[in-house]
Amino acid sequence: MGSKERRLFYSIAFKIEVVNYAEKHGNRAAERRFSSPLTETMIREWKKQRKDIIKADKSKITLSSYAPKWPKLEEYVKNWIIDHRKNGTAVSTKIILIEARRLAIEMSITDFAGTTSSGKRFMRRNDLCMSTKTTIAQKLPCEYERKITECHKHGKEAVF
Image (cartoon, rainbow, N blue to C red; front, side, top):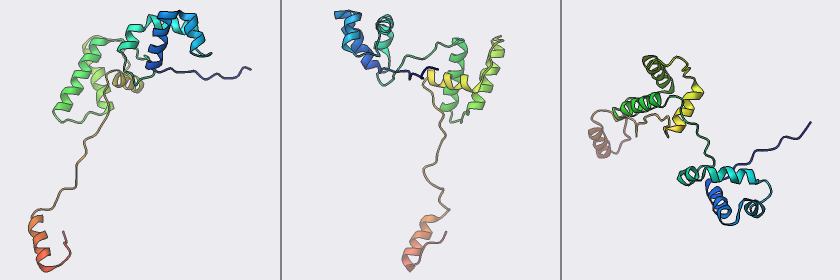
């Protein structure tokens, strides 16, 4: 039985540094310079992905975002979410999945499952997050100002 090896992840900034070095000095030289877990194959792959790596968000670690299987459906669902949020309507993950399934049927997409995990991936791909509206504070009782001034006049504690 072999030992389990941990998979290593490299930051976008590191990948750019390695690719730039490899462009000037070659893949093997870059492999020697940037440590042992890094392989020439990895450098070759990163060089192929150069354009995507440079465009990527520098705070991310990987480019592991799969292209959507149904881009038109994703576009409709994303616009639907944005419209509802603009109107101040709360949209839960369940409601999003129900709407996505409805749209898939409307678009004659037969193999769309609309699972929770696919919903999470959709949200991540489109930089959307689930957030709920919160209120700043509790509602104050009617005539609170009058009651407060009355309490101050008499030196009593306010009772609402």
